[in-house]
Length: 332
Image 1 (cartoon, rainbow, N blue to C red):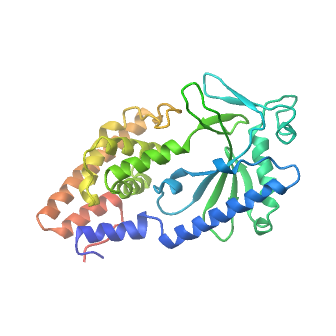
Image 2 (cartoon, one colour):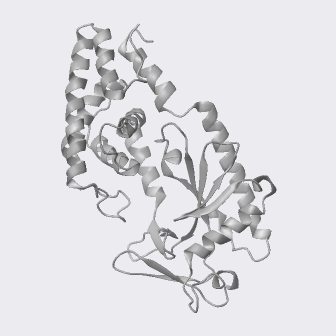
Image 3 (cartoon, rainbow, N blue to C red):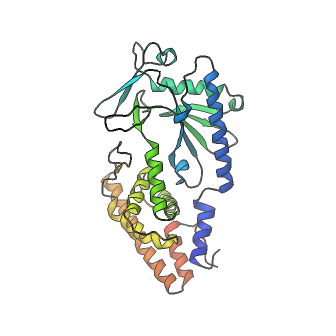
């Protein structure tokens, strides 16, 4: 129950949108402990040569844009190339060519080939994880790009992605190379995503994160087709990067965000890493439905803001509840 709009948003963000702070601490500790266990894989007979210097956390949990409930935590584990090279085709598919001298990697190549099979590499991680006594009863399997680890004691899944790190290309850029889910490899660079979020959030005095999380909550409601979380995040970051000021009061930002989504959902959304190109692969029908919902909620947000300005917090809170659902606090 809330008596003011500000109290209502504070309560809503704390109890339904932002991750629980205690759970976040536990999750980070569990993640760090997992990394230490994987570091010990180096001593296992026949395991791959690790390159710990390039290990990196990625995904929305690492970027602090994750919302409740915490369901997955992503991490990349670095591997030494041992003289391997790679080639890339026009569509971004990468093949890693392994020298016969790198016997541990060479044993994981495609049949009758010197090209490294990413599925076999993930399966090798799965075998290593099953040798950790504390993970004996865990659910461990391969899921597209990652080895997934689900512990019975936690609600989240760890997605463990093996990766290599490239030398500088002709433009001076380096990349992470990860499984593509089809047995080959692809480029990525979570540093770019991390730095982009941090730069834009700092540009606006730390006021961007809560807005992104709130709109992600709105996106998950069953009132329209759901955008991919990463697509929505990039769309919002582009919007905030072109804004001169973002208020610390979330409700002041919501009308402008909805109005932006109303039109921008029809446009290309470029990958800030300059790797994937246009992220917006939604159908026109889905774009139209999202646009319609954004405009309807933009109108309600204006009504909520007007009611608050006139001192009618009860009406304002009710209007915000129409936008964000039954979990939004009621006026008391």
